[in-house]
Length: 226
Ligand SMILES: Cc1cc2nc3c(=O)[nH]c(=O)nc-3n(C[C@H](O)[C@H](O)[C@H](O)COP(=O)(O)O)c2cc1C
Image 1 (cartoon, rainbow, N blue to C red):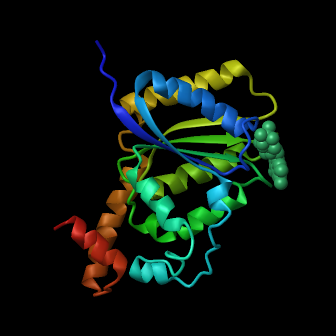
Image 2: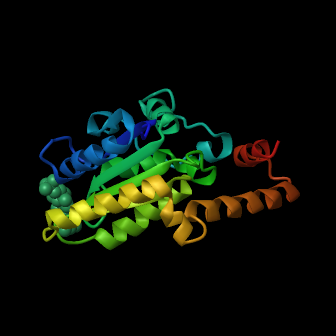
Image 3: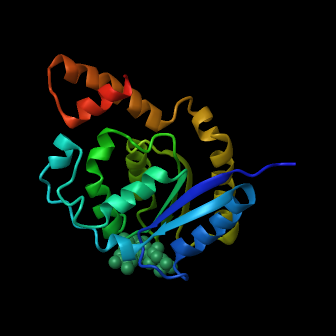
């Protein structure tokens, strides 16, 4: 008998919430499949959260201190805690003007210092991208890259445009589920992109130490080695 384990699944939807939206329809189908393999504790973040996140003002305080000046002024801490508490993170977005949606970009900007410390290392990520016709390659590459910088292991990429059939979608969902369970993607490439970046940062911090640059980031990496 196969015993299912429990996973915390966080879905961040960069679209205006509506069950009929493509991103939500794909997510629903994906969730059904994940549920066959795991018990799920599901958490959902949509624009009712994201619309209240302030835009980054570029002060760079977070890079120096590890705290954002807006930390206690909007809902960002709650979102950070949800990200840190999840096992599987699904990020979905429509393509607007060949890019991710604005509220998702604001969220990533507000997490900027996390791109230097990779606190989501070890968590699995599945990306869902929906467009009418253009932008799939650009947005797939962009999201794959920046999610890896957060430490996420991207195991799935599900995309949809005007010519995507149900069969193609089912296939992409199946592949994502296989990688989610087996980490095959990592095995194929020897090392996940997020591991590569992690090792790079690890080396960089030693140079910072040599140059006596005492920053929040240096303290963070030193602590990992204690
Ligand atoms: C503001 C806006 C910008 C858009 N920009 C593009 C675009 O650059 N390329 C494209 O192919 N589709 C574009 N679209 C179409 C969306 O990607 C499409 O509506 C999205 O995938 C959601 O599909 P749905 O309405 O079926 O949920 C845009 C839609 C909106 C509302």
